[in-house]
Length: 136
Image (cartoon, rainbow, N blue to C red; front, side, top):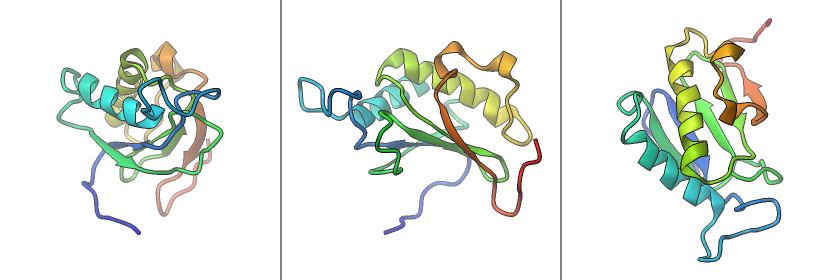
């Protein structure tokens, strides 16, 4: 069931996510998660963190009530599950802008002042890295 993937900073995209709360697929039969993954890859090609971040896919993150859910992770840092994105270039760019600050942070904590508007309200859960718990 598990498959090895590239290590290092990554956004893991749930590809089977609904297009929206009301719609499973778009008019062409495409799932929102798959479209969001494609938009993340397209936005990453011209982004400042293009050589420091991987876009990875998996079918499910068990966030079924949340369209376009992703897991932002990096070894030794707090990880985040975010969702409720639209599968658009604008939302992909906002997530990448946040990821750039995340990668630059020592523990994965980005001060609120650096959060792009496009990620505010999209956080679902944060996870401590293996061997750690957070006190703040």
